Structure formats: C-alpha cells, structure tokens
Length: 206
Image (cartoon, rainbow, N blue to C red; front, side, top):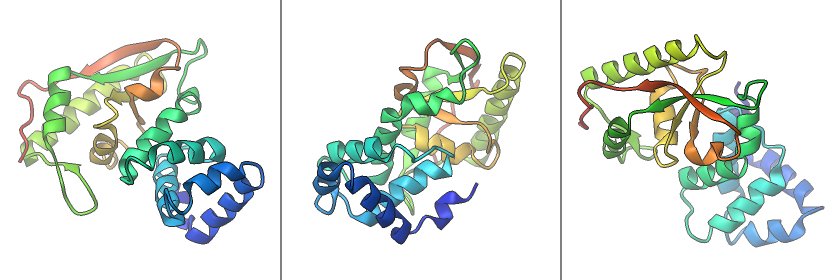
C-alpha cells in the first residue's frame, strides 16, 4: 500500500542496472539525456501509488524513451506508460468472460471537469466550489454503488487527460475504486457501461 514511499533513487538505480544487463540500448537512450534517475523514480512512484506492477521495466523504460524527447512532465509520461501497460492493468479488473464493467462520466460533465483544471502547487488539480465538490462526490458514489449491483469491481472511466486529476480528486472518498482512461482499456475486451455519473447542474470551476 505504501510501496511508492520506500522506492528511493538507490532502489531505482538498482532496477535500471538490472534492466541494462538485458536491454542496454533502452537504458542508454533514456538516461541521462531523456530522463534522470529521479525522473524515472517519480513515474514509478505514481504507478505504485495506484498499485500498478512495475515488473515490466523494459516496456516502462521503452515508453519513457519514446516520449521523453517531447515532454518531461511526469503526469503525461505516467499516462503514456499506463497506456503501454493497459492490458496488464485491466486484467485484474476483468470478469470471467474478459469484460470490463465501467462507470462512465456524462460527456458534458467530463468537459466541465477538464475546464476546472487549474495549476497549483505540485501540478494541475480540479478546483470546484465546495458545494459542487460535494455534489460530484455524491454522484460518483451513487454511480459506484449502482455498479456494484452488477459487478464486484467497477472502474471509473474517463479521458487520459483528466484521469490523474480525477483520481486525485476521488482518492480520499473512494480509495479502492480504480480510475482508468479510455486509452488503457482498448485491449480490455468487452467494455460495458453499468452506470453513468451525471450532475444536474454541471460543476463550475472556482
């Protein structure tokens, strides 16, 4: 549950050294010109904070090497890695027939939440008035409970751009409900919407 807190630079360097023994070209392409060891550490910590396995380090480092030349934003890089690991991420949430039960967001609501993203300490976050935040949390909780009548493990589905910030917004109230992006579930087999989050009056940004 707290793996990200104990993953230090020394541990990350040891992992990278192990990968270098079998995929030297990937490591040499990425470090240090693409990302520092500290940058890789931050991506791995974000993955671990959502209980995503980092065992497939070759895929993780290859994806970082592909995208680091365009951006060093940790949130963006983490989302690209999640997309590459999509099949493994969704595997744990599929039912016995390989399907995925999701709670979706009404498109108008999703657009309003994207517009509510504002820069803050530590990066962008969703800023809503207190009453709008309360209403949104209530509606998400309602949809999740509705979904639980049909599946033992619902996931919330939204756009890749919104995903990390929606997860941060919901994590205290719904810590055990995964938030996935559309890009991650492309290879998830059948995706079935079992509930939709709608807010009567779309929340307005602060």
